[in-house]
Image (cartoon, rainbow, N blue to C red):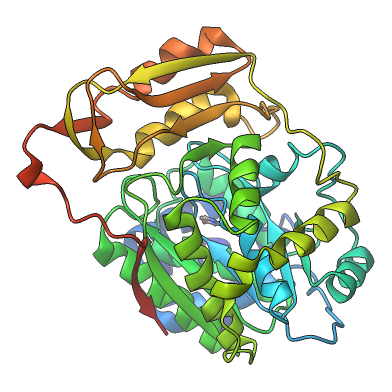
Length: 426
Ligand code: URA
């Protein structure tokens, strides 16, 4: 093959053959296809798309660029992946909950980039906790505790690592076949027996319309099916942050509340809904996770999961050096608290990073003191901005411009759902 022929074929709207796909991904991983050639091909795919068979094959080629994690675990394994959101700490209560209900959860996670948070950044606010585990340690912890949340190993889908970095700088991230194959190559290589996808919809998500989110969900599920991995997708609301906490340590504290049988209603409801789907895939559909979560039993599994990775689950979490309060502008019903704006504010306050190698502040973030649908009084505290670097506050306030809307007419109160779950795709 010649790379230029593969690029031309996709540029002109053709369908790539399996042999072309296998060759181009392998040659790119080995450095035989250059970065500029892959950039051209990624743009051709972005503009022309790929059909279901091409996307499944592309995913397979990315899996084969590395190793599959061989999990030898006595319990059924099942994983969850979220397409990324604001205040999305669901993995933290979910993994120990599903483990407490009898399945094993190998959750290889990422770090935040841009306005969305990363699970590893959140957990690293726990003193002593370590993200990097070997394949042997992952297997042992899965058997002993039933839940592992850790960094992906370097050998998992290396083609995706290279391609993702290239897409990031060539305007080719927001392509359904490229996003779907990127996510699924890592999840299939991880080797869990089932997968539940939380596809976020709204201002704080990759997909801002439900139609686009449905297409992404369908594509993800079809790739799973093509590779023999039982997969379900749940579309969930990301127009406003999940729960009250957005940041790192502040989200860990909220997750611990949920694990103790307390915490915000939307976080509890989404954790339980995703746990039900995961348990059904793991053959434990008869177990109801709701009473298990309410009982606080999953908190014991959380403590074992954190301790197994060197963390002290009882240690005090870092607190911010500076807190700035934003007040409600009017009296009435809070109709909008925009997820994207709150995510950007938390990022500017230091919870996120601008470049992959930047550090994050454990204590930075935003606490939302009211949810859309609630009545607020002019001047009451609405948001708390947490940071160790008060110089960051003006940029966070600028990000929040227009993010809050209060309606004086109670008739305009939106019927705010108690659960963020919109629909399920199998
Ligand atoms: N997450 C991924 O892993 N890959 C993408 O392309 C987008 C989100």
